[in-house]
Image (cartoon, rainbow, N blue to C red; front, top):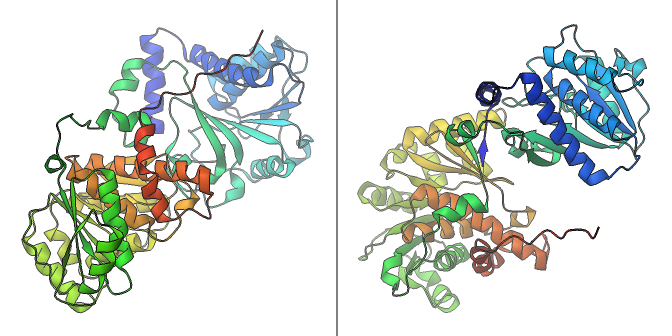
Length: 512
């Protein structure tokens, strides 16, 4: 699913009006009606007090359309105009006149805190104060209105975006934003719904189709894309009946030190479970017995050193190499890594201490093959690209880093973002159970195993992140967040694959 910028949404509105020969007022009517349909389907005429707070722009106009339809359908509606400016949009004024024609209960003008209505916890708040066009700080009394919403503990439904939230900047004052329980977003979700600093302002979101021009929706290229099952499935490579293991590549997993052979074991096992035809682990001598006995499906090559990697020398021809898990940053290991990078031409997936070595010796970044995949956790990312002031600054730095070194960079989190070629791929799977030791090693193994099978490194990263999160989502249903460990993610990976082909459950229709 594409994530459109606010500028693109404005362009889509304009093109839709032109191509469908409708006015902006007609498009507003369509949007407000869709919100009404959404609420009516769920409320079925329930007489819960509904408080609709409308700004004086187009978002407020959407709120007025909604209020009019709710009133005409017999709902218990209180409508308010948040008088935060003397300017009113044309479509707001049209719908202000229309609502006055259907009810004697005209919208109440709010100008200060003394005008705030009483709101009970059982009531419903609809936030239609500001839309995506907000470009200035919120007035103090309006901020206090938002705090009044929150203090009421009433369910809050935001139209398009929680008021006060910007689409391209982080708000410093969390009290100057509406905290919504649900947001109905037009055309596409907003990127801020998925960033750590801004996702908290809406618990859930849903996209409403307001009939924007189909050509615009299909042909417009966006900076960000939301990745779910239906984005992953078209890229899946099926297996032929007479396939053999040689067709699915040979993954080489390099890493481990004394006491950290588990990291390499997890990555190797994940690469196999992701579908690699062959997997060889390159480890210190101390890990030989451990890995051979715990993962008989993998082959093992050992370094001459007992406790760490001091040279990287092998006589096989791997399809892809995953490197860095538990490898440490000893000077001999760093030297071995540098020598390896100077001669290596094989696609790479780099994790953990491999990233830390790159952070300490950034000249090594120029030795990476094109489209190397780098999978840092937050502190490793900071060491790599430098500190950031907020989430948007982090994305900016990460994109610049990816472009400079031609690498695929993962920003891990609740919505892991894969970055390459100025494009953001925002993942939708995963849960807090993944906050456990070894889950990153598993992700590295999955991506390595996918590249081994012939997936493009960008596609392998996107699919790998999705399957990693989906496996955890399935596993957590049986195990809970606290009991989920990295090995479980591998164990449920097969179910994550199978889920790609499951048809959605049919919706049960209520008896008439």
